[in-house]
Amino acid sequence: MYTIVTASQKGGSGKTTLSGHLAVEACKHGAGKVALIDTDPQGSLAHWWNARQASEPHFVKVGVLDLSQALARLDEMGFRLAIIDTPPAITASISQVVAHADLVIVPTRPSPHDLRAVGATVDIAERHGKPVIFVINAATARARITGESAVALSQHGTVAPVTIHHRVDFAASMIDGRTVGEVVASSQSAREISDLWAYIQEKLSRLVRDPALLPDIMPTHLSISPLQDMPQIEDERAPPMPEVPPKIYEGPERRGLPDRRIAPPVPRLNERRAHVFGRRQTDTV
Ligand SMILES: Nc1ncnc2c1ncn2[C@@H]1O[C@H](COP(=O)(O)OP(=O)(O)O)[C@@H](O)[C@H]1O
Ligand SMILES: [Mg+2]
Image 1: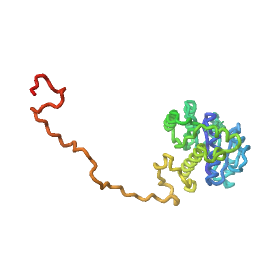
Image 2: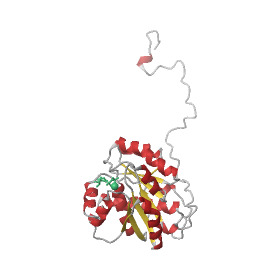
Image 3: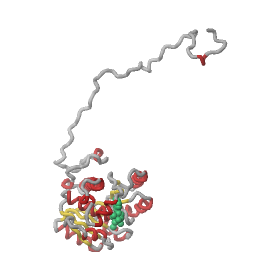
């Protein structure tokens, strides 16, 4: 069983929202049995799940101290993925949860306060040697600070190429136990979440070297996809790309003007000047 932990010391950054959404998305894309674990004493994820009609993903409320036993038990029960939501601010308990992670997702709002809080979370992950992915959440469309935040975050680690924008459907869906995709499947928010899951799923499959986790379809518009190859994972579903020979241009010569490397003829000295500004009174005509 693989474990994804959403962590950030800043409250309200989107840990609970993304935990629920990613768990539902994982179930939808056949990641096997998925457990959603709430380690936050405030229990926001538990409230969401209690309001939920669908039985998947499964939900477990665990104290931080009992986490290892709970994870071992879930593994025995055939769960393939656990997504763990953490409380904000309490460094010690975040650290204990991060210790179990295969991948740490750090949701960050594009604001100076959130960016300042990132360092502490990254320190915890680094102390445990855990890979981190930042997800910019609740971004305003076309705001310059989104790009600036991505650059600032990239100094600390990997930034997901999918930004989750600020939309009321995220807040609304969390109230009635659903996800944005379960409310309106064709919404922009639903598309962002499914792209984000495809990216995270692919990242996780590389980290744990498990080709079975690879997404069936990788969205082609994710900027990261053309840059990557998978040398370590042998995946039969993805045959190698055929080599295309370079095209050689065989058409007519397209250069219209004379060759500038050949000097133009030098004008004769006693030739009459063409431009009036070049003339003096002493010039003989
Ligand atoms: N992308 C978003 N757009 C709009 N509201 C959001 C978005 N992400 C989170 N929220 C809202 O912000 C609040 C805090 O989010 P939450 O996931 O509970 O953060 P955390 O768990 O990090 O404290 C919630 O009311 C949630 O509905
Ligand atoms: Mg929360």
